[in-house]
Length: 440
Image (tube, rainbow, N blue to C red; front, side, top):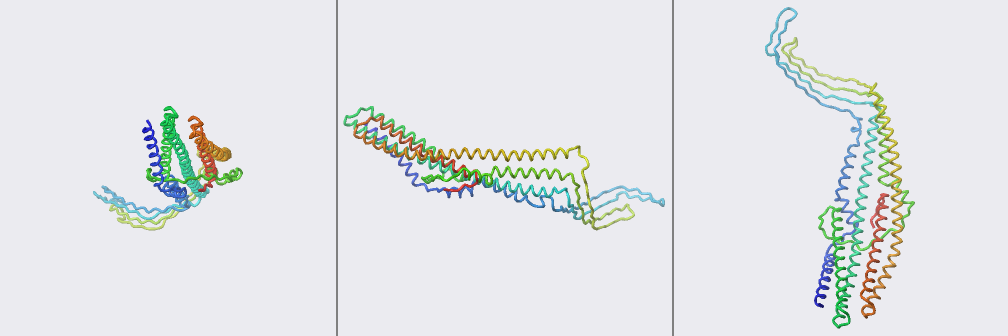
């Protein structure tokens, strides 16, 4: 029976040693390095950059309609006809197969010089869309970075829990060894040895579950970095929470930096521009045309067998809508409603952001309080466990009491590390909302 216990202890030691050795061999991945890799490789960021480039390419005066359109055309027509002509002097001209050809080629220009200021509104809209893509790009970068930072800190939190669970397992292993020694000299019953073995098995199972969760977190981080999902690494062992966050500063910064608010404001400006585009159709459209044409006509049936001509052509066009079934008024009314909707959306977005900030700040404050309490609880639980373990060695307390002290110490460590992590989550999210995310 004692040999079996020793074998079980040896297996547990080997498992923990293997995990620790593997973690030691894996290279350290700092948060700064992780962010740099993500900014370079992450698919969401790459797609957002490409969309921003497309919007920037579209922001031109040519796309807005300021510049003329010049085309070059060439047309060649042929025909074969049977021609019967009776001339004014009474003679008849009969051509059984009259081959006719007509060749036209040359450049042409169409230039709208006034369209009710629509081209100015179009250019303003393109600039606003480009700015919207810029905000979207910054939002994607900050969101991805925030997700990566939280995943990284979650791994630190999990590693702390693994260390705590490993410490609890060491105590359970010590308890099993002491119980086995006492059983061998006949001071305790076999039941106490079995209880110690069950406690060690429970701690081992919990450690395996934590290790599996830790591996899943590493896969998630590798996914954000867009690299081999099985790439092994270790993370830092410390989470530092910024304790100088002020609610008023966060709320004020969010009004000018929050991506959602900025996007809502840009969409409101686009709504005003859309009204200008609709109103422009009330004005006439004036344009100029021009070109240079070469023609070459051949026909055996005319008084002139061949004719060649070349020259400049130009003109002025103007048009205005007189009546379109009252659709102009309908479009203008709808555009004004869209402006009202955009204004409401700005107010709603600001309210939602302020509510989110207030909730996160409350979590942040409560988390900081829990960190202070948790640090004191861990120290008290550690001291209690040390005293309890010493008493168990001399046989003055029961195994149930040492197990309770062990559980209290483990719960205190879990609570403390979770409080630190949750405070960091609130801090990172607050800074992410204000587009002021930094790396610590």
